Image (cartoon, rainbow, N blue to C red):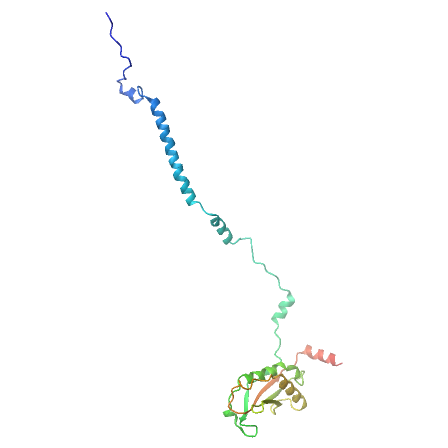
Length: 229
């Protein structure tokens, strides 16, 4: 008599605890599937991270610009010392060699013999400035530098003849030959004006400017006396 037949495969354990431990399952087929999922996940992360890195990566100019724009604490502006002699010379101003008063309009009219009072005389504009500049440029023509003094320079202008003449007035300290020599210096220093461009109402003008020459400094006096000896 034949005995009871055995099943070809063992039956799965009925104990739930054994099922939780994985007994009876085909774990050899689950492991390759899990590995493939992990590899696919890592590859996806890599594919996502590389474009993000390339997009967010700072360029070369972003590294260089802050370094170039930021001033270095160790770099200071170069200061060149000025010699003491130059500092002293810069602080000492040259004394005024001549002081010129305002322009006074003495007389004007159709001609020298037909002059009118100064109240109706108009300004000669540029010609008056040229007159003052000529006095400033001829300071060395002053008669006496040691004591100082003044000359009342009078300028006569004839628009019909297109000529001018400078002579010393009576109100200055210096008159005579020395004052006339100084007036000739001023007359030569006046550049010929453009007669057509000078605005004027009359044909003849006489204007004056009082020039006061202060005494020369003591060192200049000594040097002048030494040169005279």
